[in-house]
Length: 327
Image (cartoon, rainbow, N blue to C red):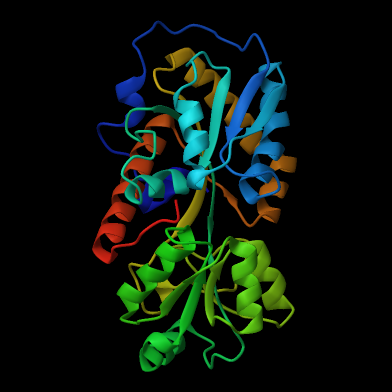
């Protein structure tokens, strides 16, 4: 889905990219040595898998190898810091996620400034989460869950991948919009939280699409809704939380590509073109779909505006609720 088709991603005036691209004459550019793509999460995770699917496609367009460099720690901040301190010569890329916009609201100094330390290239993909419940919960729809949760008060537990994680924020957003008081239980990652849900130690969890699809189809868990504004093309028969009586509810995971700050316009254009070719590749699209994501390209300007909006949204929620991160 193209970025301009999403209300949330509508571009506007002053944007990150516009403020950080030097005024240079249009000219051709191409990398002259192997390219490093920093991924701020461990090998084997969803973001790492995306990077390893994307790297060979970018390499084919660049005529140079693109090597994935995992820089883990501090909720993605370590990798972001490394990218921010790199030379803007086009040989260092950053593939980051929604945590890039969340982290600055959780700690005083994440070690990077979202507004000034990066040059946006393009959004790559988006995905909703799936609202899952344990079979012991007598709800098959969002309205039924809301009614049940309101009656249970803080006796109903929702899990997350850690304090300040995406699942924590989306769970608290659900509480605020639905008028529920589900109690948050943090775990160290998606896997342990899913395991706890399967065991009935928690009753509610917003999980990633592939895991949710697997357990829901197997009957071990019940999927009630997805968190996007529109149904997921991967789960087209599953309604959205918004359609279940919370019309303003929307949460999407995203992955996007960046350069360090002050990257010249020809370099940005080169990598934008390379990314567009990758996103149009049928093999890449199939792998993205297997991960539960949807292709969602953008211009640099649109991406810059989007992440600033996203950061402001989560900063308000974190401040209103008093959420503290693990890092």
